[in-house]
Length: 453
Ligand SMILES: Cc1cc2nc3c(=O)[nH]c(=O)nc-3n(C[C@H](O)[C@H](O)[C@H](O)COP(=O)(O)OP(=O)(O)OC[C@H]3O[C@@H](n4cnc5c(N)ncnc54)[C@H](O)[C@@H]3O)c2cc1C
Image (cartoon, rainbow, N blue to C red):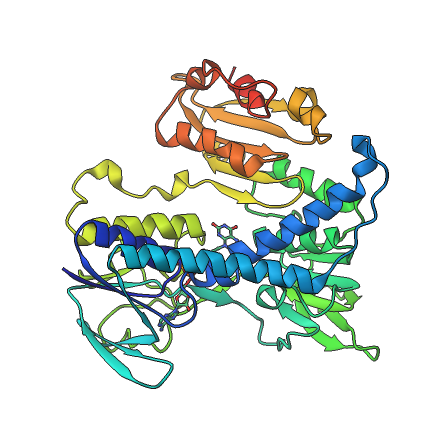
């Protein structure tokens, strides 16, 4: 089986390594860096910067932990070196993994010449032709910028110019209050910037549980973040002092030193020769796929952001894995289908937020009977020891069977703790299975067992 993958992000890498393990002859074509945008621009650098900001915040709170006051300062060059070395290490280890699995990696920009032929153009201008029995398009996406703005990488930024920016903004205006927007608010607030956030709805994180969003909003307000709710940014100009002025559709204006767009992404589907090869692309630029990630052509797959499903690296990886299995004919068991409803996700703010499965508000909206139990971290020994008792654990279960349907966690290490609920949701475990697990004491996870009680 000649399996050719275009795009080496989480979807492409997972499909390549798993496909090779299953016996496919795999070729992966990547034009930038192996690991993809996830490694180079998105997940990794943003979390590396947030981790630095979190250490700074902790150091500034040293007195609360019984230490003499500390006075740490920011070193942008050192931050930049740190971010790039993490990215490089991850890329190097991924290349070794691909190599050890016998995957052929071609550095170049690929396009389809026909539905079974791919051309990769190397940086030196050489064209390499490859024939394929199965093809995966996993070319990802890039930040969306409104037509009324031009990113200059200096004062007008997307997330891609922020690792780190040339200077720490004195006053950053963030446009977009979804996951990416709030993470960047948190990041720059912890670096000491003043931050204004333009929130097009009445709630930050509009797609999340209102109770969860409320904790984050309260924390933003307490730390001086200015929220402009119900406002849609419609224009941008430069001020005489070199700053930026953002105009909103309700006549409000907000002035800052820098602006950052976090308003979603555009799929990388242009220039791939998709239409010529007969691959259907929808109006938004995504390649619609079925539950096996198969496009309208039986041997052409799409996974990751280009597929228009949940734009998460974790989902992209799992799609890549499922594609490899389908390519190699191992998809017959129905329960192996990817269930996007069961994907855990996290928001790396402070407090951290994570959720999985059915949300309380969703269940009420469809009139589904559920049991909701909620335990605050305020009474948890580990949270008090760590000096951060904010947040709660909420578990949603079926009142008749006790099966865990979902949950959300707000608080320290929420992204790690949600794994327990994610496993319960995927494996159809019951609340009693969590209650009866012998957990560590003192640990934040004890709040999970209490919430499951
Ligand atoms: C700021 C930010 C933070 C994020 N943080 C998280 C997070 O913490 N956790 C999480 O799960 N998700 C996160 N995401 C989402 C996550 O980054 C994406 O969902 C994920 O990267 C999608 O993976 P992918 O495999 O589709 O492709 P990508 O990671 O986008 O990689 C696609 C690759 O294809 C290559 N490519 C494109 N066209 C061609 C071509 N013609 N020829 C050859 N190569 C090509 C590109 O160079 C790129 O390397 C974040 C997103 C953003 C914007």
